[in-house]
Image (cartoon, rainbow, N blue to C red; front, side, top):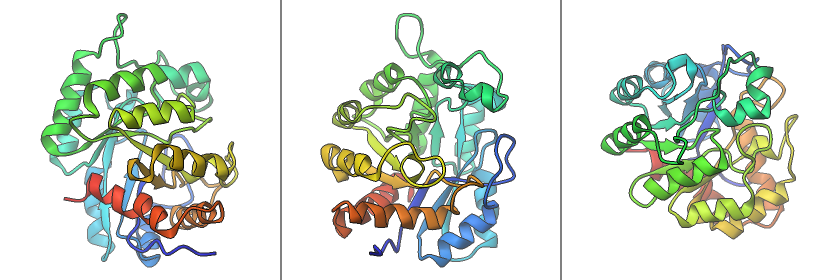
Length: 281
């Protein structure tokens, strides 16, 4: 069964060259393949560099598709660096991820060490559990520019602090929820709690399809039903050399969700309508 995902926007597309992993596509290849598949847009993600300026260049090279960028608040850009975030947003960035591979969570997981990323892990809260001033400044910048504040690979506690503070008044995205290989491996109950606070929950192909999958597709389909498809986005998180190219992976994920009984309308809402509401202006 093939689901029509014309108009899809993949909000989590990796590309090469990359300092940490071998990649399956360049940014231009990712955009061209998404366009040829009938997608409306693709958002380029890098853990080590801002991508808004690259997205503008790729958009000029690849006609017929929206190409978006963002910035990860990792060691490579100075961590929680509001100045770097502001520049990225001024250049058109649509998503700001709180620390990912440089997060305290990924240092604790051992993911950072596997990729040669130095510690100590970055945190977004102080010892009393309150948000750091620089996180508040970054969140305000996201609000002012109409950008998405994404939770990155922060701890479950940090996810909840961010969502409680901001999700009811600006766009907050929970990054690749339920992923076991990076971040806090949120449970379905935790995802539902975050959605109730107002966050959008991102479900990714990487989690359940391909060489790095750790959960069955049924888990993510069940999570979407529990959370509500109006509070979910579907993305690939692909670009790894060991997996399909992102556009192909997104289609496989949509088709697999349909096999699990999800309707075409619900899948389209998560893969096209909801992502567009987050990043299209």
